[in-house]
Length: 184
Image 1 (tube, rainbow, N blue to C red):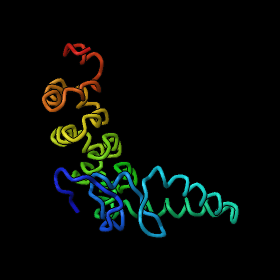
Image 2: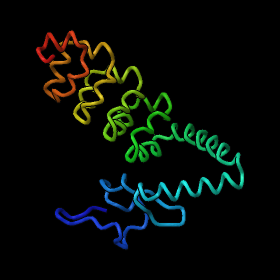
Image 3: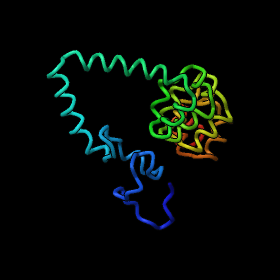
């Protein structure tokens, strides 16, 4: 669902039943509630804390079992490209659960980096050393450059290309090279 240009977002609009119904830019701010509907993330924390306390009172080991189950599901999740891409649109950190094959998938890694530049640290070594890919990543999020391969971070010619894309990224170049470029 897209909002018209100039319209004001109203989360109580009856058309919005779940977070996925919200405009994409708003989805990160909300979380689905198991009983139905959704709430702002910050409003859900106290609800979640109360539920966790109640569960622990009833069964002190329930939380440990649930964490183990979630960890196993996350590992399985990391092998399903479509499910992972959907999650990456909401949370770039999910890349850390991706299989090695998916960490080497340009589309998957780029989606993660769009959400959070630091996700590049979970990309394959090949992708973090791929000049064209790293240039594209820096276009999406300049902070990701810190996780490019050491060779790229130290390649003067590549740094000049990066400077054309986003000069802020040069802050992650080695100090001696920044001095040579006159930016230290």
